[in-house]
Length: 183
Image (tube, rainbow, N blue to C red):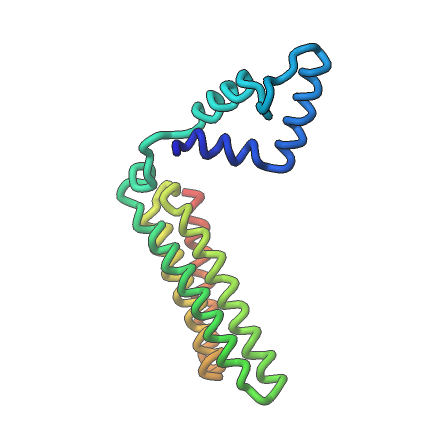
C-alpha cells in the first residue's frame, strides 16, 4: 500500500472526517449530485484528497538524507531516551525500599530532577542536526546532561549529598548548549 493510500485511509476513517464526509455528502445530495451507490465519498473528492496528500509526501526521503553526517545525534537521542526510561524505572524500584519517608522524598526529588532533565534533553537532541553548529551544541548538551543527570542519579542512588556541586556545573554546560543555538 502506498503512502498516499495509507494517509487517505487514515484521513477518511477518522471520526471527525466521517462527520465532514457525511455533511458534504448531504450537501452534494441537496444540490442534486448524489454519490453513487456504495460510495461513501464521491470519486472527485477522493481524487482531490489523493492529489493533495501526494503533494506533501516526499518519496524516497530518509532521515539520513535529511540530516547527513549529523544523523548520529538522532541515534544518541534514542539511546538517551532509552536510558532515561531505564534509570527512571531503576530509581523507582531502588527508592521504593527506603524505610524513612523523609529520606525517600528527598532522594525521590533528586531522581525526579535527573529524569526530567534527562528526558527533556533526549528529545532536544533529535533537533541538534538542525543547529548551525550541531557538533558543538550536541557535545555541550550531551556533556551537560551526563554531568547534571548523572550526578543527581548518583546522589539519589548512593544517598551521598557531597557531590551536589556537579549538577550546578552540568547546568552551566546545558546553558552553554542552549546559548550555542544563538550563534
